[in-house]
Each structure stands twice: as C-alpha cells, then as structure tokens.
Length: 265
Image (cartoon, rainbow, N blue to C red):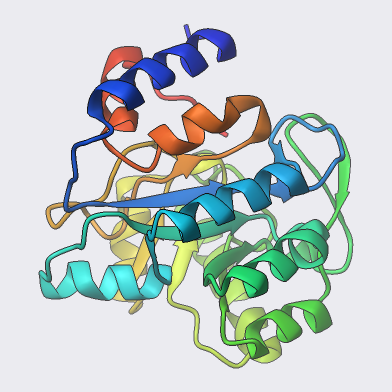
C-alpha cells in the first residue's frame, strides 16, 4: 500500500537531512504533468514550479536536455553530480502558458511528450477531468526557443500492455509522423503512457532508431541503466518541497526501496 503524503514528506525530510551531504554521479529525470492552479492531483502550482526552478538555479544544478543525458549514457560518459533533466507528459496547454515562461526565465531546457491525437483539444486525465492540450502552433513556438524538445507519448494514449503489438507499432508510427510533419526536430524519445509497456516495445523502439524511452518508475539514472526503460521522478504540489529535493538525490532511491511497490501515474 502506498505511503501517505504526510508520512512521505516527513520521511523525505529525514532522509534529506541524513543524505543531503552525499553527492552521486547519477542524474534525476523529473516528470511533470500540469503546471497551474487547477486543483487536479497531478499538478504543480505556478508558485511551486518557480520555487523548484529557482532552487535548481541557486544550488547550481546541471540542468540538461534529456537527449543530451541519453547521449552521455550511450557513450559511457561520466554523469556530473547534480545533473537533472526536466520532462512533461501530456503536453497540457498550461505547460505553454505557465511552465514555458519560467523555463525561459531560468534558461532551463525541457522535453515535452505529446499524445498527438489530442493536440489543440482536451484530454481526460486520470481523474476524469478534461484538460486542454497545447496546439501545434504553441509547440512550434516552444521548439523555436531552443529550450524545448518534443517527443512521442503515443497517438491516443492507450495502455500499451493492453493492446496488440501491431496496435503499438501503429501508435508509434502515427505519432512520429505527426510530430515530424508539424515540428522541425526529429523524434528521439518515447514516453510509455502510464508507464505501461512490454519488453518487445522497448526492443522495437531501439530498432527504429529511437535514442531512448521513459517510464514512471522512480529512481536515479546511471551508466548501467537501460536507455529504453529510463526512470523518472514524479513531481506534484501535494508531494511538498521536501519530496522535490529528495527526488534530486539519494533519498528517492531509499524511498523506492522502502515502499517496494511502485505507483503508476
């Protein structure tokens, strides 16, 4: 059974105080969804998002693009301590309206994973609430800044472990084609919706020339990690600032070991 938020916040607070002095040559990939004041569960308020970006800037974290991190891992290069990559799933319009201005303010790169069938429309989140998704025009503006890369989050956002392999291939190809038609940079990454996939899915993406794929399993990333099952650390306001700080370092790995059963988001 997942640990309750309050207990998790306290546990992170203790772990951060205990392990905060340790540096590790691994990276943390942060996973965001919505950024705003909409009251949904998987969101970070604008205030909290800026606090987090300011913390990364003030503490001199090495914030790099996901593609750059993957290239370093692929080449077997050493990962600098305090390396972070920022990602967003679902391409909600508030990523453009609220997160993008702050990414520009702090000059931080990010990768946004798009479920292409929903562009310019609304998408039901896990709570059944309709959330607006950004348009292709807005995505192009973000891409042209040089800070934001876009990648595939499938076409219709299905549970990949529940569909036939041929359907998975169609989801990948349809999404990739739309991304290539509407944006300039080639598609390098895939985010498995809700973290669900089968081993053959990762194999297929690798054979198709993708650089990597991300999941929702939490933890840090090091040289021995599989590029097609990369771990990410989920950030949302109810998690609190202690959790955010803990997910930048060793605390998240200790918590992951303690809770044993991973949550899917």
